[in-house]
Length: 195
Image (cartoon, rainbow, N blue to C red):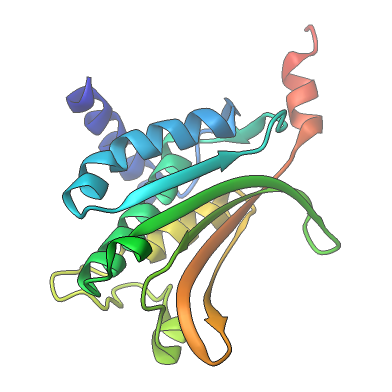
Protein backbone atom coordinates (compact mmCIF):
# COMPACT_ATOMS: atom_id res chain seq x y z
CA UNK A 1 0.00 0.00 0.00
CA UNK A 2 2.82 2.37 0.90
CA UNK A 3 4.62 1.61 -2.39
CA UNK A 4 1.45 2.33 -4.38
CA UNK A 5 1.00 5.55 -2.42
CA UNK A 6 4.60 6.58 -3.13
CA UNK A 7 4.02 5.98 -6.84
CA UNK A 8 0.88 8.16 -6.77
CA UNK A 9 2.75 10.93 -4.95
CA UNK A 10 5.65 10.95 -7.41
CA UNK A 11 3.24 10.90 -10.37
CA UNK A 12 1.19 13.81 -8.97
CA UNK A 13 4.20 15.96 -8.08
CA UNK A 14 5.74 15.42 -11.53
CA UNK A 15 2.43 16.34 -13.19
CA UNK A 16 2.16 19.45 -10.98
CA UNK A 17 5.72 20.59 -11.75
CA UNK A 18 5.11 20.17 -15.50
CA UNK A 19 1.72 21.90 -15.52
CA UNK A 20 1.68 23.91 -12.27
CA UNK A 21 -2.05 23.18 -12.04
CA UNK A 22 -3.41 21.07 -9.18
CA UNK A 23 -6.04 18.40 -9.86
CA UNK A 24 -8.73 19.68 -7.51
CA UNK A 25 -11.33 17.43 -5.96
CA UNK A 26 -13.56 17.75 -2.91
CA UNK A 27 -11.49 16.61 0.09
CA UNK A 28 -11.61 16.73 3.88
CA UNK A 29 -8.80 18.36 5.88
CA UNK A 30 -8.98 15.52 8.44
CA UNK A 31 -8.18 12.90 5.76
CA UNK A 32 -5.23 14.94 4.44
CA UNK A 33 -3.84 15.29 7.99
CA UNK A 34 -4.28 11.58 8.78
CA UNK A 35 -2.46 10.53 5.60
CA UNK A 36 0.39 13.02 6.14
CA UNK A 37 0.85 12.02 9.81
CA UNK A 38 0.85 8.33 8.84
CA UNK A 39 3.58 8.95 6.24
CA UNK A 40 5.60 11.09 8.69
CA UNK A 41 5.32 8.46 11.43
CA UNK A 42 8.49 6.54 10.54
CA UNK A 43 10.60 9.72 10.47
CA UNK A 44 9.10 11.01 13.73
CA UNK A 45 9.72 7.70 15.53
CA UNK A 46 13.26 7.50 14.15
CA UNK A 47 14.00 10.98 15.49
CA UNK A 48 12.13 10.32 18.77
CA UNK A 49 9.73 13.24 18.17
CA UNK A 50 6.08 13.06 19.21
CA UNK A 51 3.19 14.77 17.45
CA UNK A 52 -0.08 16.18 18.72
CA UNK A 53 -2.74 16.88 16.11
CA UNK A 54 -5.91 18.88 16.43
CA UNK A 55 -8.37 19.19 13.53
CA UNK A 56 -11.42 21.36 14.22
CA UNK A 57 -14.81 19.67 13.92
CA UNK A 58 -17.16 20.33 10.97
CA UNK A 59 -14.64 22.05 8.72
CA UNK A 60 -15.97 22.83 5.25
CA UNK A 61 -14.96 20.52 2.43
CA UNK A 62 -11.94 21.83 0.52
CA UNK A 63 -11.47 21.91 -3.27
CA UNK A 64 -7.84 20.81 -3.41
CA UNK A 65 -5.40 18.30 -4.81
CA UNK A 66 -5.21 16.23 -1.61
CA UNK A 67 -1.97 14.45 -2.51
CA UNK A 68 -0.15 17.75 -3.08
CA UNK A 69 -1.49 19.35 0.12
CA UNK A 70 -0.57 16.18 2.02
CA UNK A 71 2.99 16.60 0.73
CA UNK A 72 3.12 20.18 2.04
CA UNK A 73 2.01 19.01 5.52
CA UNK A 74 4.45 16.08 5.38
CA UNK A 75 7.35 18.36 4.38
CA UNK A 76 6.62 20.77 7.25
CA UNK A 77 6.40 17.89 9.76
CA UNK A 78 9.68 16.36 8.57
CA UNK A 79 11.45 19.75 8.66
CA UNK A 80 10.25 20.34 12.23
CA UNK A 81 11.36 16.86 13.35
CA UNK A 82 14.76 17.36 11.73
CA UNK A 83 15.23 20.77 13.41
CA UNK A 84 14.35 19.29 16.82
CA UNK A 85 16.63 16.29 16.32
CA UNK A 86 19.59 18.28 14.94
CA UNK A 87 19.40 20.64 17.94
CA UNK A 88 19.55 17.56 20.22
CA UNK A 89 16.70 18.89 22.30
CA UNK A 90 15.66 17.19 25.56
CA UNK A 91 12.52 14.97 25.59
CA UNK A 92 10.36 17.82 26.97
CA UNK A 93 10.94 19.81 23.76
CA UNK A 94 10.79 16.92 21.26
CA UNK A 95 7.24 17.43 20.08
CA UNK A 96 5.34 18.99 17.20
CA UNK A 97 1.83 20.38 17.21
CA UNK A 98 -0.26 20.26 14.04
CA UNK A 99 -3.49 22.30 14.21
CA UNK A 100 -6.08 22.75 11.49
CA UNK A 101 -8.64 25.45 12.20
CA UNK A 102 -11.01 27.78 10.34
CA UNK A 103 -10.05 31.46 10.18
CA UNK A 104 -11.42 34.59 8.62
CA UNK A 105 -9.23 37.53 7.67
CA UNK A 106 -10.07 40.73 5.77
CA UNK A 107 -7.39 39.95 3.12
CA UNK A 108 -8.15 36.27 2.59
CA UNK A 109 -11.75 35.88 3.69
CA UNK A 110 -12.71 32.41 4.92
CA UNK A 111 -9.77 30.01 5.03
CA UNK A 112 -8.67 26.78 6.64
CA UNK A 113 -5.29 27.21 8.36
CA UNK A 114 -2.82 24.34 8.74
CA UNK A 115 -0.27 25.20 11.43
CA UNK A 116 2.89 23.21 12.32
CA UNK A 117 4.60 24.38 15.51
CA UNK A 118 7.79 23.00 17.03
CA UNK A 119 9.83 23.84 20.11
CA UNK A 120 13.07 23.74 18.14
CA UNK A 121 15.85 26.31 17.77
CA UNK A 122 13.90 28.52 15.33
CA UNK A 123 15.20 30.06 12.12
CA UNK A 124 17.94 32.64 11.72
CA UNK A 125 16.79 36.00 10.30
CA UNK A 126 18.76 35.56 7.06
CA UNK A 127 17.15 32.13 6.59
CA UNK A 128 13.64 33.54 7.17
CA UNK A 129 14.16 36.07 4.38
CA UNK A 130 15.39 33.45 1.85
CA UNK A 131 13.22 30.52 2.93
CA UNK A 132 11.22 30.01 -0.26
CA UNK A 133 13.99 30.67 -2.79
CA UNK A 134 14.41 27.77 -5.16
CA UNK A 135 17.59 25.83 -4.41
CA UNK A 136 18.26 27.63 -1.12
CA UNK A 137 18.83 25.10 1.66
CA UNK A 138 20.21 25.08 5.19
CA UNK A 139 20.77 21.32 4.98
CA UNK A 140 24.14 19.87 3.99
CA UNK A 141 22.43 17.28 1.77
CA UNK A 142 19.44 19.49 0.92
CA UNK A 143 18.33 20.22 -2.62
CA UNK A 144 16.47 23.38 -1.63
CA UNK A 145 13.28 22.42 -3.44
CA UNK A 146 11.19 21.42 -0.42
CA UNK A 147 9.84 24.77 0.80
CA UNK A 148 9.97 26.35 -2.65
CA UNK A 149 7.76 23.54 -4.00
CA UNK A 150 5.51 23.80 -0.92
CA UNK A 151 5.01 27.50 -1.58
CA UNK A 152 4.20 26.83 -5.26
CA UNK A 153 1.65 24.16 -4.29
CA UNK A 154 -0.04 26.39 -1.68
CA UNK A 155 -0.11 29.42 -4.01
CA UNK A 156 -1.50 27.30 -6.87
CA UNK A 157 -4.44 26.65 -4.49
CA UNK A 158 -4.71 30.45 -3.94
CA UNK A 159 -3.41 30.04 -0.39
CA UNK A 160 -0.55 31.62 1.52
CA UNK A 161 2.35 30.16 3.52
CA UNK A 162 4.41 31.90 6.16
CA UNK A 163 7.00 31.11 8.83
CA UNK A 164 7.74 32.81 12.12
CA UNK A 165 9.91 32.26 15.15
CA UNK A 166 8.19 32.02 18.52
CA UNK A 167 9.67 33.99 21.40
CA UNK A 168 9.68 34.06 25.19
CA UNK A 169 11.02 37.57 25.76
CA UNK A 170 14.05 37.76 23.46
CA UNK A 171 14.69 33.99 23.44
CA UNK A 172 13.53 31.89 20.49
CA UNK A 173 11.49 28.95 21.83
CA UNK A 174 10.30 27.45 18.56
CA UNK A 175 9.10 27.94 15.04
CA UNK A 176 5.70 27.94 13.34
CA UNK A 177 4.90 27.32 9.70
CA UNK A 178 1.32 28.02 8.70
CA UNK A 179 -0.47 27.88 5.40
CA UNK A 180 -4.01 28.73 4.47
CA UNK A 181 -6.36 27.33 1.86
CA UNK A 182 -9.44 29.28 0.77
CA UNK A 183 -12.87 27.90 1.53
CA UNK A 184 -14.64 27.75 -1.82
CA UNK A 185 -18.20 26.79 -1.03
CA UNK A 186 -19.58 28.03 -4.36
CA UNK A 187 -17.46 25.49 -6.26
CA UNK A 188 -18.52 22.72 -3.91
CA UNK A 189 -22.18 23.70 -4.36
CA UNK A 190 -21.71 23.67 -8.13
CA UNK A 191 -20.21 20.18 -7.97
CA UNK A 192 -23.04 18.77 -5.86
CA UNK A 193 -25.83 20.46 -7.87
CA UNK A 194 -27.71 18.09 -10.22
CA UNK A 195 -26.91 18.47 -13.93
